[in-house]
Amino acid sequence: MIVRSLKFALAAVLLLAAGAAVWMGTTGKDMLRVATGSVSRGLCDAVFVAGLDPARQFREEEAPLMRGVAWALAYRVDRARREVHASVLGGFAARAVFRPGLGCLLVHGDGPVPEAAGFVPSPIASPFPSGVVGSTDPAIEQALDRAFAEPDPAHPRLTKAVVVLHQGKLVAERYAPGYGPDTPIWAHSLSKSVTNALIGILVRQGKLRLDQPAPVAAWRALGDPHHAVTVDQLLRMDSGLPFDETNGVLSALTRMLFLQPDMAAYAAHTPLEHPPGTAWGYSNLGYVLLGRMVTDAAGGDAVSAGRFARHELFAPLGMAHTVIQADATGTLIGSGSVYGTARDFARFGQLYLDDGVVDGKRILPEGWVAYSRSRTLDTGYGAGFWLNVKNDTMVPVWDAPWGMPQLPRDMYYARGAFGQYVVIVPSEQLVVVRMGISLWYGDDTGDLVAAVIAALHARQPPAAAAASTRGSRSASVPPAA
Image (cartoon, rainbow, N blue to C red; front, top):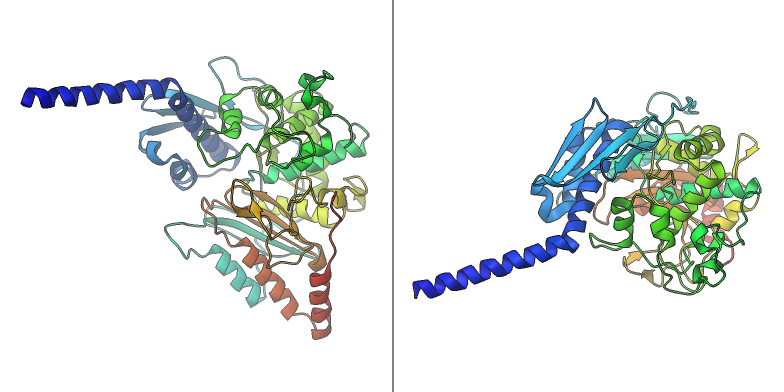
């Protein structure tokens, strides 16, 4: 009987071992490489771009996402070489290297680091005062108190920064301990709105047209279904490329970001799921291709593209601490690899509130803002920005709201993973930036902006407040594209 039981136990162990071997040889290997790639690059950015504590960053952002493998992950910060190494039980090693002016690069293999020297950016003057600007309005301070509160410790919001601009002026800001006005924060998909601006600049310069077939080398053949995809459709995410950001560890997004040295090539060879212009699907792939277009127009390499972004966009706006990253081929990762301060993103939002003009200089082409916030198909998305025009359904796949129904209908916004927001409310002449590490839905940004609007109305004369409220309710938005 004992021998028989031992045989069953041995058979079970062998079966598990065989299953583990198969898993490690296929899906498991990629999952663990994604994990170490995420940790090494995320902590490299945290330490060498943002100046944050790596242990805190790993605890707050990386470990919760790793779930069952967090205990097996190890990382090492090499400050002398400005690198971060990560591994799982000593294997599946990943290395991220800081490049001045370019942020961190996830290095694939042991070869040389492309453009390792980076470049030394010219300083950009900030238009804001050096100290933190607190509000004198108790109602606004109360709104900020709520934004930084933690009502559910099991699902922390981890708000890191809030900045409020009203009528172009900084009226309130607040930061979490360890963060401040000069702390760059990972913007995630706020980067897509930055890419919208860079494409707009190229359109203004006559280097791109929205209606032209996307200048992607792999799509040039007339018989290729991708050939018909336009620049406009990539911006609007109705190119026909698949919805590529899902909740699983492995998706087209994570494979591109952490397993591919040439992200644009991976995106370009992804099959279409729909004819161009017929269906909407959230597309990081499309925005990496847009980043490649910016890179090509700027000179073809990461340093040229980084300098272009600083000269044409960041410097005129006073975005003093913003960095846009590139992959190993020099492609700007236009989908989600920008770091910037909350103040920088407030200035970015103000650019759109002011119709693409800053200090009397036109940065974006005339009509670009209206185009960016015009509706795509039957969605709550424009071209690089989310809209507040659809409340009858949820965003597919994510089951998340399209907009914020408690806010004026003319509101539109940039949104990034884990609670990054640039909320623009034209009828209120208001920009609110909220940044943090909210790994679960519930960052309360819509209620924060609503509370700020209520506070601004309360301190206006009654007649002016009533007029503002009427304007908010009836404010128009651009027609559907």
